[in-house]
Structure formats: structure tokens, C-alpha cells
Image (cartoon, rainbow, N blue to C red; front, side, top):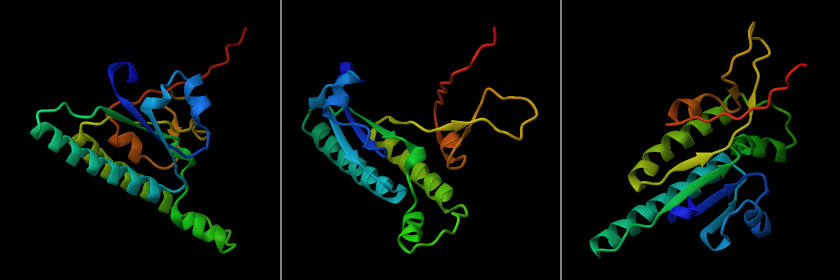
Length: 168
């Protein structure tokens, strides 16, 4: 994307990206912005605010006869985002299980950001962790993503990478 003039905006949930790491991955640090984020709600709010600002800036640029800003957003990784409730429970010393609030918050985030990304003409890419279904009688090529099905149903394109151990 950077080779095509895009600026990469990365919301990092794993504290895995820094200047040196970005360069090692082939990113141009001058065209990469990095935002650490811990909760689904913070991620949704930050990206939504960012997208609204891009929509406004690009409208002004278009009116002035200037080219629109080219941006690509990445979230690494969706699976590592905690819900605000989960963190509040931990702070209170509670060991209560998250009974679906995380999945609902992720689905809400993807639903809200899908429309704004389309309006802003900005692609959103995210990584997620996938798992085999231990209850399946036959293995499936399509794996289960953590955090509910919202991301699967709202995605325009899914790419799944996997490692398969071959038997000799």
C-alpha cells in the first residue's frame, strides 16, 4: 500500500510495532502512524474519530481541487482487544466470565467502522487468531475466529493463513 502512496495507520493491541520493527517489515516510518490500544471501545472510538476527520479533510481537499489523502488502516490484532467490562472486572478483582459482551462489542465496532471506512474510501485490514473446532467430526478449511462472527460476516474479503504438518 505504501508503494502506491498510502499512509499506513496501525492500531496495535499487542505492543508489537515500533520504528525498528516497522522498518524490518518493510514499512516506511515516515508513512506509518502507530497507535497502541487496549480495549475494543477505545479502538472503535479512535478509529471512528480518525475516519470522520479524514472524511472532512478529503471533502475540503476535493473542493480545493487537491487529491484525497490515501490511507490504509490496520488493527493488529482483533483477538487481543479486551472489552472495557473485562478490564473493569479485573480491576475489581472479579473472576467473572465475559458472557458475550466482548463479542457484542467487536461486532458493534466492525459494524460502525465498515460504513465509515466505505464513506472515507479507506481499507481496513485486521489480523485475528484462528482455531480449529475441536467438536467438529471432520476438519474444516475455514477456522473459527475468536471474538464472535461479526468480523467474518462484515468482511469483504477473508484471507486465512495456516500451517499444516505433513506426515511422511
